[in-house]
Amino acid sequence: ELLNEICQSNDIDKYFNTNSNELMENTFTQYLNMLIDKSKMGKSKIIKESGIERVYCYQIFKGEKHPSRNKILSLIFALGAEIDEAQRLLYLGGVNKLYPRDKRDSVIIFAIENKKTLNETDEMLFDKCLKTITDPE
Image (cartoon, rainbow, N blue to C red; front, side, top):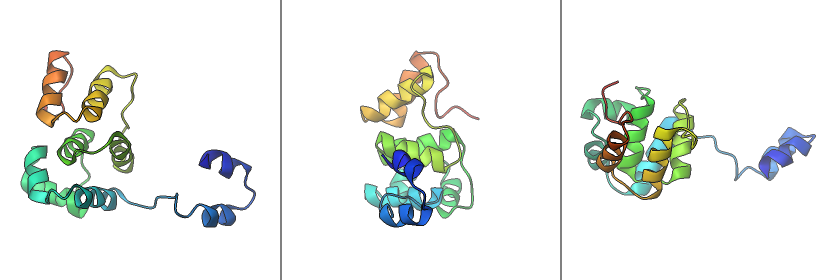
């Protein structure tokens, strides 16, 4: 709907004013921290669940490090994020979103939708002879 509206609009300021509550301006770090707050888990638990080294993870939380796609996926599973939140976090992280035509991504999408843990997802990937999320990069 927004795409149609902007394509038919002849005034960008009017579009912004009309749709201000629909437009996102978050950075990766802001969005990640919003998801952390929403989860009510606490950063230490998220770090533990993600399997990411503690200092590195805090640097990600502060915006000092730009994580790889697999690190972002690890955080997504640790947060228990929904698929739309996962896609947005991947996009804001500057990496490819999950693509259902890709076999590995299909398993990951399935795992997110079915609330699998990171370890359960890695087992599913391993069983399908696909690269796991926690494989060294």
